[in-house]
Image (cartoon, rainbow, N blue to C red; front, side):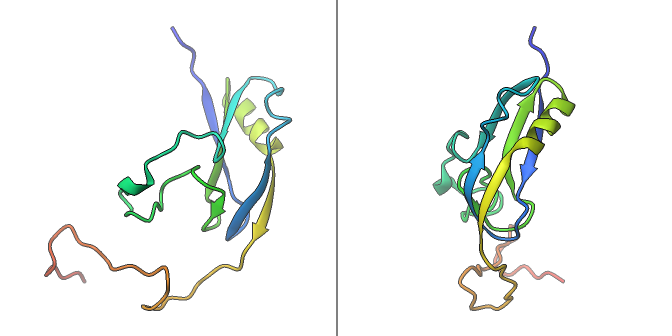
Length: 126
C-alpha cells in the first residue's frame, strides 16, 4: 500500500518574462519533501500535438522558463503533508528577467489567432 503525497503549486510573481534561476537547493533537505518538479525536470510533452487550448501550447505547463502571464505555474513541490509542501514551496528562490506586459488588443497583433468553433464555419455566437 502506498502513502498519499501532497503537492503545492508555485506560481510566478511577475506579469511576464522568463525564469533566470530557480534555486531549489534548500528544499530537498526540508522535512517530508519528496521532490520538486519544474521546467528543468518535468516530463517532456509533445508540443506539436497541441492541446485543448490550441497548438500554441497555452497549457503546456512546466515545459519552459517562459512566463506569459502572472500566476503561471512554475513548479510543483511534493511532500508527505500539505503543510510540508507549502512550507517547502515558500523556500524556493526564483529570479526573473521581467518583460513589459502586453495588453494590446488588436487584430494585427503578432500573437492574435483566429477564433475556432466546434460548431462549423457558419456558427454565430452572441
